[in-house]
Length: 319
Image (cartoon, rainbow, N blue to C red):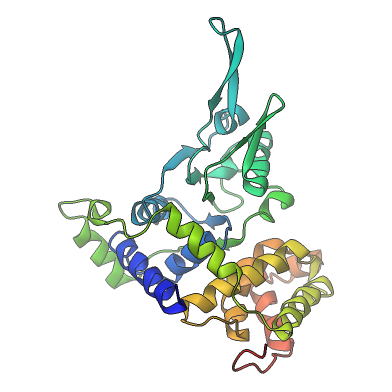
């Protein structure tokens, strides 16, 4: 398949998702690209802005098996991973899969549960497998976690560990719809559920196919250097206590390839990196006390770094 085929398929999927998620095209494309780049997505926002609807529209357009769990303080790690039960008839322990065994796992309000339960997501997100009682069970392919969390400081929330934040390829915020789009949302739900109108246009095999295709998109050496220069600037910034890890630079490289495909190209440009950099890097940096006192946001710092790091001039691939 050529690049135009995958670009067209991305647009077809987006068109279906737009039936249920109105006025959030930028969020939709970023979520879709993160999935196609084998990444996980964290959405931080207030309740009621459409986070769950987004995940359900994605699962319907892609014919994916999905599960949803509302994270509360009493959720146990075994609820996610599964557990073994002794069967008297067979004389053996039988594994009962947890809610995470699906293609698309929606972890709703993840920061309302305990740190122990949050950490249960670490292995399945990183290794795409779960170990219970010494036995390892592979998760279905493809596998993506979309986690939502309420803004930090909300009642009953627990901060996600830095190690877990680092495992999310991107972090997004949907925000309130504008006036016109909120009116359109009311119209769309007048006498029907917009999710019922979404038709599947792809399946799990297509996702695996496009994941492999994106992995092989050409990246010029100057793009590698550009990404590393941006990451290095976060590690040597007066407002940043802890900069972006190598896992972050790998995530930015991978999703920049996805952006290139969505734009109809089979090679990465610096604009692809700039477009998605904030969503990949902002949740991976820890601000210094100086930044907190100055009330400087991660968004402002990454934007400042992008202005200062020299941009390589690339117009076409030089293989």
